Length: 509
Image 1 (cartoon, rainbow, N blue to C red):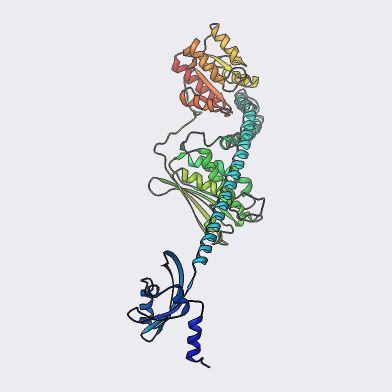
Image 2: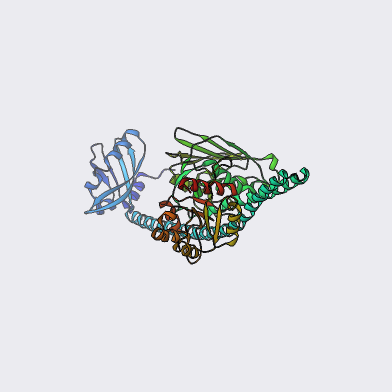
């Protein structure tokens, strides 16, 4: 049932909301009481409304909009609805200025709250990273200390095993029963192999114990770092998957060995943890190294694990994002890896399929130049000129095995302090080679070097530093400035003999 026209007109005239109509010339043809009291003809003919009037007339459909109109010298916001009626339009509007102000205020409050929350998250992230850095520094200090303490006794064991192997060969030449000699060879070979494993573990500890921010960057042997990382991750991998290596010959990359090792270790551990225990033969972790696009080296770590879901994929490099249960990871591994790779000018990308596994590809720029560092080969043959050697080490066992290695070819003197060595030299003693430990109480090997510059500069040039790898900032700076040879403990007997003979031949003893 339709309401009478006069009833509708009475409602429209008295409603507390502006209602008006205009013709095709935008002339006001009717308005209600509220419109007349608060607005006026100028309001109805405001230019903001004209496009809306025109659209309603052309489309013969209602038109709705929101406009800001100046009324009484103030800018006010209105929501308007326009209806076509023959060749005219009827319009009604509702002021939303207060609502917009409230909305703006709410929006501002929400924005400020979001900014505070974001700042809090950043603060928490930085705090967590600082805590992690402190923890890693503590672990690194402990690892370096353990490595240093093990090196000297391990060096003694390795050298004595090598000397025992040489003595075994001498026994064979003297006619000792062949089976006995073979039995001794096997036992010594097994013991040497076990010590060699310990030697590699110590080297790995020292690499990961370095302060990566302060270690100088340089050319990195990618294969060497991958092998180190795979050994470190072996305990995580062995019960979950077979480890397959496809390592093509690749160029060196420029960066920091410890930081790159951290990237590869994180990727390997993540790959292992994506695979359930108990079916190692049925799963695979594959490590591939290859030459990529011109000037780049690519390393890929792939697994046959659970894969990454589409909703998690965009967040895998976010700090503290983890799909592991609480307490099983901080969610920093991939974030740190991404940070390190990008700081080296590289990229890290992922391919994944849920239920089939993932593959992470690291692409790094090759080093501009490659410096190959080689140790003396056992096959090097040098003429032996008998020389006078001074061994300086606060560990008496080091002096003992140095004497055992060299005494058949040279005269060897042993002291256990740099001060004692300095007194001998000040007293007139001269040596063809000085084998000196770096870190010693009272006077370090580096302090002795500078003292010799004052009293016997030619002897400072003949110093060989025997290091256990625990360097301070000052010792790192020293070795960057000097060219004296360095032999890292534990070293093998033949390497020491060759190095000493080369120095004596060069100086013309």
